[in-house]
Image (cartoon, rainbow over all chains, first blue to last red; front, side):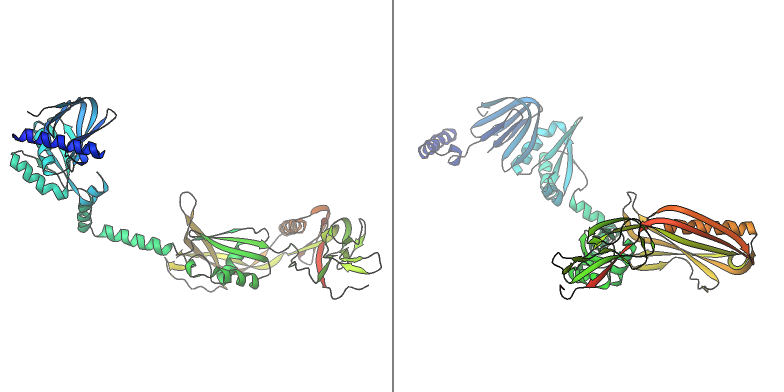
Amino acid sequence: MPEKQERRRRRTLGEALASLLEIPPDAVVPMTVCTVRGRREIEAAGCGGILEYGPERVTLAADGGVIVIEGRGLGIEDFTDGAVLVRGEICSVTFGEEA
Amino acid sequence: MGIRSYLAGWREFTFARASRTAVFDAMFRAGIPLRHERTRGETTSVRIREEDVRGASLVLASLGIEAEIGERHGLPAALAFCRERPGIPLGLLLLAVWLRYSGGLVWDIRIEGNTKTPEAAIVSQLADLGFGIGTHWRETDFDQLHADYVAAQNDIAWLSVYMDGTVARVQVRELWADGARGDRTHTGANVVAGECGVIEEVNVFEGTAAVRAGDVIRPGEVAISGVIEKKDGGFRWEYAAGEVWASVPVPLSVEIPLERVERRPTGVEKTSFSLKIFKKSIKLSGNYGFDPATYDKIDTIGRICLPDGTPLPVWVEKTVWRETGTETVTLTADDAEAEARAQMRQLVREETEGGVLLEKSFRGSLRDGVWRLDGLLTVSRQIGVTREFAVEDEKS
């Protein structure tokens, strides 16, 4: 089975198990967790890397795809333990497939 | 930058703005945090903790990105600065030691509650008991100090000393105005006349008035009695208190000889200065040992204060030694009269203080080389004095 499909199968099983146990899925399956605070800050934990970084667009490598953050005056304030903190005037957060 | 970053130290990395994405991605994957991103024109700078500098340099080198690394900041840089200038940390350490030491000394004494006892007398008495400016107050037994003070004098009935930082606050309660201690258990008192006069008014607080307005009273006679006769024939005692106002004749006399021997300055003066810090005195100029019989010594002491008026335990003492010699001085009659009148005015002020001057008359004459000025004042003033007596048994 291709690696991508294998990862999707494990994720689906893990999510089903989490649902059965009534616990958050990220406790069972490693995944990217985004926390948006207002329209000024977004913290993405579990990222794989920074693919693009500019004042109007930040692209992060997430689990199984990419996260595109668009806005104005964007800046990466901090990244520790695999979590990236982006601040600025956030206009949109888009999830996409990895290239 | 947080406290942890300050303690660890940090440096600033500056690289081309176009490389920003690659640099951030590489640092993120390497687990090297970047903070305080600043973009100036075509360059971007970030701060990296000192412990991550080597790792960050390797990462940038592996990417082929050139970066300018700034100087070290934070605590390590401060320590290096102090290592090159040992006087600064040494001075700070001495300052800390001095603050700690001087915090245990009395810097100032503030007295509250005294109305008739001068502050200088209270301070002097405390100094005799070993407590004053410069004393190590942490070693002072304040309870014993309070007891010793009250036992050593007769003006203060109660005293409390407590420290407010480095300021000693002294609270006192004075004895009654006429000096009585107030233990009335086995003590009665009469108010008697302290001098002769004509009674004007008797204000009785306790006891019974023994005189009326218009009565002539002599010194020692009872004005307010503390012996009260009961209706059944016996008597009981009280501690009489009150005011006895009388018009009192006050004779005054001043004599000024036309010729006399005076000590006058010769014009020779020497000045010395000394600095006093807490209890230590430091001579700043020469030590002059002069004969007090031929030199007058004038001491002027000034206390140094901060700009806001807070006094410091530092005094500057200036001593002027003025040589004097004896000289026979001859006055004219007019000069002698003027001097006599000046002295008489001073005597009048002293005698009328606390009272009211009702009448005055003066007569002057020159006889046998002496100008004599006699005066008679009539002053209205309080003449009552409390005289205690012991009570043994109630007599009927």
